[in-house]
Image 1 (cartoon, rainbow, N blue to C red):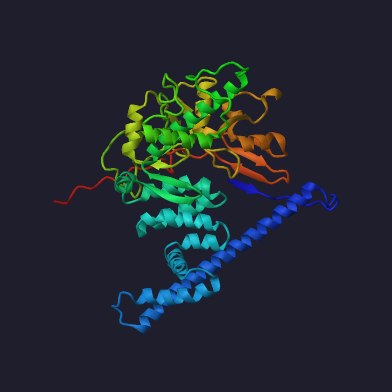
Image 2 (cartoon, rainbow, N blue to C red; image 1 turned 45 degrees about the vertical axis):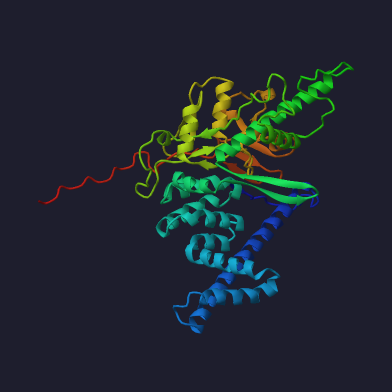
Length: 465
């Protein structure tokens, strides 16, 4: 997303004009935020200096081979800083170590942070994602990750950063997932007031499937309850029918109760009908899988520093291991092929392009998040919006449609925000103050090249013997 705020205040304009006030307020908030970010960068630099000072004290105070010298010195310095920061010295010590890593291993990120081009949330994201890379890959990763983060929200750029790191990672997501699955578990935690929390760590596709099935069941019960309330006219209610006009539970409450039913009895017995209507509902998991991942070609080791075999992605952008992606794709009764540009990765078309169903499918693939600047809600929450209203002659075609969440769909129609299509799915938004924001459709999980026809590696010369 890029923006332009070249609003010029006309001296002849009424100073209490709402547009003028909003433009001035926006400018002040922007300047204040930039100042805060620069000060946060200065604080990180100071904490890094504190860590380096602790290492210097350790080198002077004891023999070089003493393993705990730096640790003790760091504790001492952290305890001193904790007194003025009003924090635990353990927290301060951890922040010192993290700041030192940022300054020493992520110089490009630190520079962008100091210039207020990226926020602390971007910095944390880049630092956390780059932790699995070696020193050689980290430099290439950092350059691209910082460039992608400038002008975007941390939430929206997260999937891009994850993809970059995955291509450069020395170990594939499948290998790491296999190890992480060893830590799957269920736990409980006291919450007070007679409540407890039940937690589950498992594969992303499984957790998404569990949540989707519970959501489908909860919505089915909620719709049945609503209909029962409308249809009830003093008639006896069928005890075996789904729906109770007196049931006013929200979706979250229904989801929790259905989960408890299923875990305790093996089925949503407290809600289901005699015909097993709810039990028959199956989970839906939507994934995107690159064709090279579907073709199991070997270990997936990086070639020329880039991993060609990419993980699949759940709707919303979370990567999943290639083994799970292949299983889900192989068991699917139907799936769609999405054609992308070999250079930019932009969506070009989907198979069986027809009006209505296939148009929705294409837009669902292209607009994998809400297309309003800064919003990252997944496609399940989208409305298909006509950029030029159909009532005003706007055609129902790709170049006049975009996926918007309900919040921003209403904002477009009920406020002074405006949007134009610039081609290839690019949207130009104009705020009430005249600022413009360019939103480009997120590239799908795909392998792209910088050149349309990259040169092949040079042929090996025969050995001179």
